[in-house]
Image 1 (cartoon, one colour):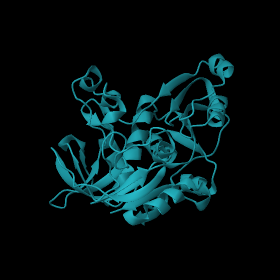
Image 2 (image 1 turned 120 degrees about the vertical axis):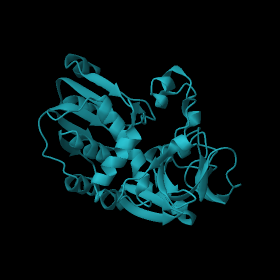
Image 3 (image 1 turned 90 degrees about the horizontal axis):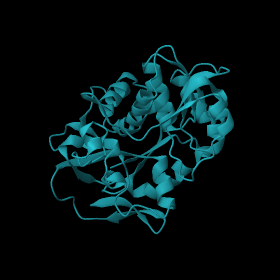
Length: 311
């Protein structure tokens, strides 16, 4: 079957064996290109597996599903308490990084990875459930509530999903974005006016300048939630950070909160925002145009927010 892999620093379509081993076969329909994918293929740690951790497809009977791309051990202390995103096995249990991901025609996954879609969500749009789950997890850890004034730094997919997740918790939310397309998307998703300071800052851009802005905008005693991935390390403005006694809340992927997964809440949020796919998914490409899709995702000047590959 066809699959998208990293070949000597470039993305290409290759023929790979059909999936084997234990699990449930999924016919893949959509896979989103994440900023992490772009960073990974440029790094010394470029995956040697099929790319893609934002994915959705169909069971053999046609049932549409999103796929939670984590395959934790299930027995370590982190897994037992529900924090399987912190599984002691590390990133080797993440599809698209240590395991074959969703940029292919088919994949075989454990049953625990299947997430049934709510009515109204198209399987071609359901790759958005994964980034929404990242936002759900981060806003949950930040303890956002109805009385909070929230600012989001960064208008990419994660930042815009965090806007939806924070507004669903009752917060008023402003978005600070670099590109016109991102600002327009934020307005369509209900972003509010900018203020002088905020109770919670969600940093989703992953740069030193974004962190400096976040600290500047936070009120004394506020919270700084880190949803970005900092590939090159970071410089924090330590003096104002400490003088304000800001609480830093790192966030990684998604997990379980009691009996509910962040992924379950993400499905509900995507279903409640029927315009979300139209707003976030700016480009769609077939698998055989994977190289063009990745080039488009890199160039924000083209207006790309979420670029999706369709099988």
